[in-house]
Image (cartoon, rainbow, N blue to C red; front, side, top):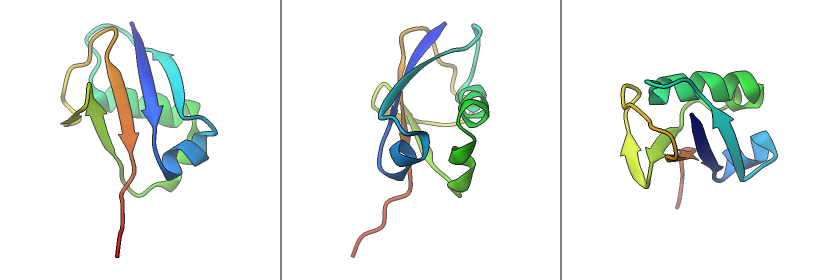
Length: 80
């Protein structure tokens, strides 16, 4: 299945893209997506943590993704 991945902030800088498409097998989870992204873009491992949103809602690692979903990689945000 195909998934659209959006990158924000430092995550976009680490992968040199704001948007990519990846293919995963059916019955994949957010965790499977993270593993595939870190394999394709090893620089993502430089982030201590990041959140994943699926179709504009935060999702846990065990959330099942489906073909056509849009995932966003959201790095930690600090402010002052």
